[in-house]
Length: 229
Ligand code: OAD
View 1 (cartoon, protein in one colour):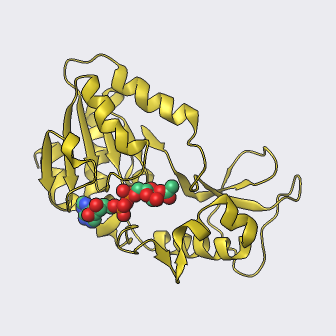
View 2: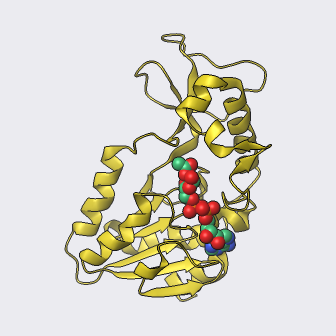
View 3: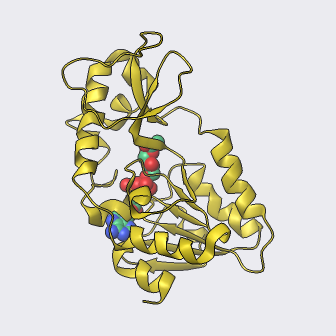
């Protein structure tokens, strides 16, 4: 079981949350990544996500994403990847057993009706997009601050960790261990008897719960660590 955060995409050229000091063009991230922020200024929120779409499209998966996709082909159903990233790079690298717990930058949904989310790479800079079913405002399919994670996603991760196996390894990569519930999965994994590993460029907030800490950049060490390449 692997959990990734923004650090795994850093070597693809995408800044992490910490790099950006929680700010975008002087706005607190919470102002552009929350239901309250969207209600107050949807045009600002779409400008932020349009820029992020453009930025992610110019980046490519790195050796860390590729190693995770490769190890999945070896382990099959014995592998699960949960990511807090919304950049879509794991899927582009070929990962399939993938849970995007914070949503996906390249999906849009209606803020008003139950129309299913749809694939969308568009940038909305001049006018606000509206739902063609109910005319409500469309929004990015991202889990914002203060919103609930999809219960089916949580269940999938927890069921995977609970499933008995001769040896389970929980590996967290490129995440500061600040945002829950993902930051708590290492403890859950330990309760179920897993070995716990952290690969991160610096100490993480929940670092005390890991058996082994590899202080390194993910694209540099994951190929070796996962594939012995
Ligand atoms: P952070 O930006 O909080 O943390 C990224 C971590 O990756 C830091 O500890 C860095 O030291 C480390 N790092 C940077 N470059 C690295 C590299 N090349 N290899 C390995 N590690 C590296 O990002 P997340 O932990 O992903 O939530 O943040 C978690 C959530 O907080 C995000 O999903 C977002 C934010 O609030 C939502 O948007 C809901």
